[in-house]
Amino acid sequence: MRLIIPCTTAFILLAAAPRPTLAQQSAAKTAAAPSLSAYLKTDIEQVQQKIVALARAIPEDKYAWRPAAGVRSTGEVFKHVVSDNYLLPAVLGHPADPSTGITTDFASAVAYEHREMGRDSVIAALQRSFAHVETALAATPSAKLGDSVSLFGQSFTVQQTWVLTAEHLHEHLGQLIAYARSNGVTPPWSK
Image (cartoon, rainbow, N blue to C red; front, side, top):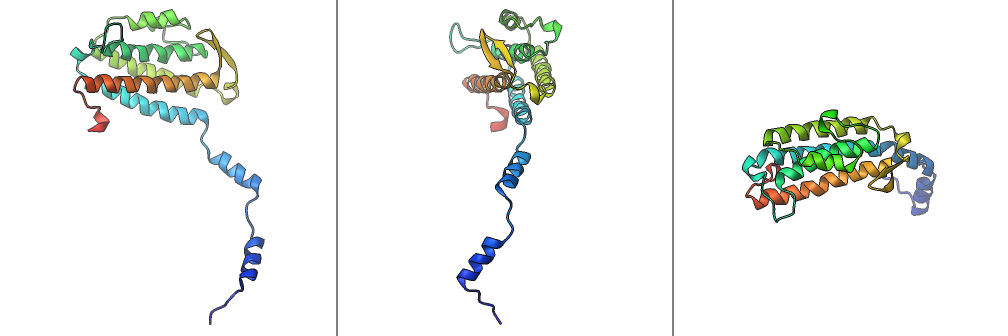
């Protein structure tokens, strides 16, 4: 025998059924959301894999290639990524490896970019610089994300600086993809 419940009774039963409160729903959403640092860590790791893969895929003789006069060459873009992977955390109180010569002064990062380095040295430098970013990000307490720092003559929060670090990496990943394809190199993850 089938039990038939009138619509009104069904509505009352559903309305009376226990449900999480708005506060409980909000708490569940907050608990499930990863922290900004966790999100940035994952994002930067993915960009690292792609940039390092491109550095390995592009032949050494293409490291001197540039799309036009006055524009960074392929090798210079890789070195620029390395230099800013040290510069931006240094501004946040995480000093660069002294062997890089990079301080919180932008000129020190530019000087690094002009170093003569072969492809293998650039790849090794990329890996070390990404390890530095990862260590510095992990050492940044959430309580400090709202603190102010001075960068490029402007005031930023620590959080804005970390987001800028990730944005910077994505900008140059796109540039390096274009450089690679201009030289007949397909990004390894696109094959």
